[in-house]
Length: 293
Image 1 (spheres, one colour):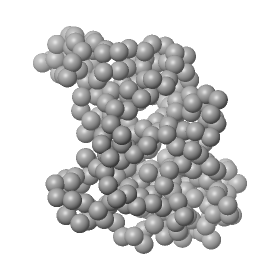
Image 2 (tube, one colour):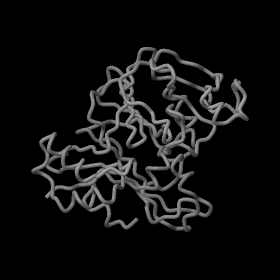
Image 3 (cartoon, one colour):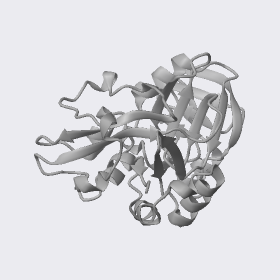
Image 4 (cartoon, one colour):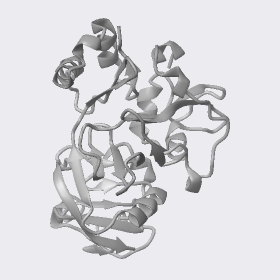
């Protein structure tokens, strides 16, 4: 990715990451929010044997996010010494900041701790595959399960007859070590034994988190916590006098039309440079971009 692609993304919020942290201490999931923005854009220079899949997990990102931000980089074996964009800045979804919010379009979960309006925890997720789409709507957590047993649904048994009817807890269990059951009882927020699927459409409708992330969320979220699942491919915020947009083209949407309509709805359209908006809609790098005049 060319550094010119950043154009005028809030340079004052940009940082450079000089070393990887252990997976258990991946770049913070908890952020302080201001003007509807959290995090900061970073960079990392690849070493031998790095891959974008591994770097995504190290930096608390999904595969979709790191690939969108680095479209010219080989995701499996980037050349040593390649400067990688770490897209760890987000515009918060345009919904009430309550409980858990999952934006299907960006494959990301946000948790708003009660009584702490300035704090946000966020994690990348895997979502439902084509034909098994994760349903949008408003739900509640009704059960918290440690070391869940997977009772394989009949629909999956028909698709994969080699599977047993019941998979006990353990390394072969796709639910991982923790699960949160939603009031739509067939849908869980859970861990995974295949972390490479985070930031991808891999599930039969459930929400997958990295093994280390589900443990953190499990500690925070309580029974009856509200869970709002949305599809919001365009997000926008005004910081100072600058208009930022963040776009995620998860279903081949006509992004410019959606961005235009969203900015019109929010009353921001007069702040947008049409050429910058067209470019941002075409590239869909999944990071906040300044499209101001």
